Image (cartoon, rainbow over all chains, first blue to last red):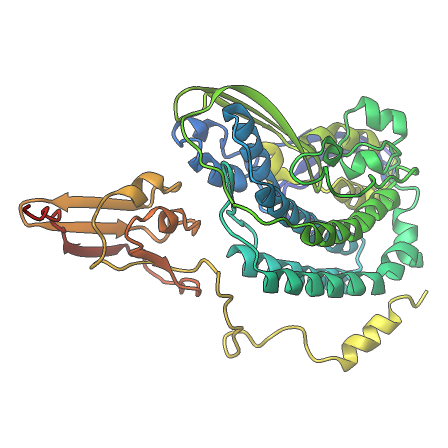
Length: 358
Length: 124
């Protein structure tokens, strides 16, 4: 059969966001994939010229809904480093708690979408029901389900009361119990394994050379986790990066599944070690200088470059999101796969197109 | 095989996880950032909320001739971040823990109040 080009996206049942990939297909086997991005570009980096550096926190939070808290945390850490602000220890712990809760709900959302991608809708509903507990914690503690708006330059805006802490612990314990109930389904079920094992293999060398990030990189056997940089309160928390060796869709989903349980453990550790103290340090003056900060988002390493020149408006904000790094590895995974596996492979990198295009 | 069966049976015997939404509503959380309101009697029209607002949805004007000030908020541009609430020096801005009801028309929240005169210092 002759070669044909099949457009995948920008509107597709399995994709919540507009990603367009042209698939060169021969006999239902993909030979090549040509990506086309740019459907949801909003020019948020340009907004730094008309929004001051405090207002930009709200802008960067809205780069992406699912990792909003971690975006603003990365931005605030960069500005604090430029201005030499010492963040109170309690604020660092609170940031850690909220960022790990965000990682949990992001991974649960993805596990649900992944199950939906290979047609397991009941499992999708199960994961999203568990995720609702985490969303309720977010809403009760920060005031909003998705865009938490708790980070400010110098600390955080909200505090956790002891009653809230005990409630969070009980909710997280219940969530973990519910996750473990469906662990057997997502990891050992015949249909799930048949659709994910050996599909979209990315070798360790390929992942490293193509600059993959996050679970895509760890699923291929590279132990890279930005939380090892010990930002926020991670210097006092005990954890090891979760690594799988196979590099296929199953390995990547296993990494995310295990990271969900790891995040729950980190939330418990952070609440147990929560020190007393102020919530925010005073912030005076304007940022002058340039900085690069990195944090670990649910999808991988997120990099912020910021440049200020002593004015209240930043000269430049550059956001390198993890999905941007994961697009080349995706294009390396797609050749020689079956057309029916394309949605599963694309979803296995956890694409966040709004992040990528900013 | 049959890994999902215990979960399926449990779901059959449990009560529903969802609500009949418009009829049955969950109590809002205390900290929920819902609709923004301004207690205009306490507002001093200092424009701090207008300056701090990241979405620039608040406009404050003062008319010294008539001695009145106007506080206008575009609820469709508001992003419910509550930064104005934190910035307000008189705590006249507050947020109710219920979200704004949908409306078929675009309307602006406009409130007019009297400008407070600066307090005179007591004569020694």
